[in-house]
Image (cartoon, rainbow, N blue to C red; front, side, top):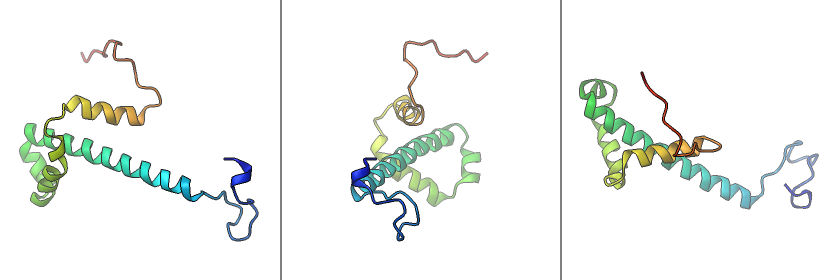
Length: 108
C-alpha cells in the first residue's frame, strides 16, 4: 500500500495496525460476496449430484427445508454444465489453473 495513502501505523486509534482504506474495504467486501456465491453454487451442485446418486444418505444428512433451499439456490444454474461450475471453483482456489491440454490423472 502506498505510504501516502495510509495512516501512520503508530496512530493511537489504530493500535499499530495497518488501516484498510474505504475503497479497499469495498473491494474486499465485493470479493467476499463473489466467493460466497461461488461456494454456494458449487455446494448446491454437489449436493444435487449427491442426492441423485445417494438420496437416502442425502436425506439423512440434510433436512427437507435445507434440500428445498439447495434447489432454490441452484435454479440459476439449471442450464450450466457441472464441469463448468467445478472449474470456476477450482480456478478460484488455485494460483495458476492447470492447462486444459494436460492429460488428466488416471484413477486406476
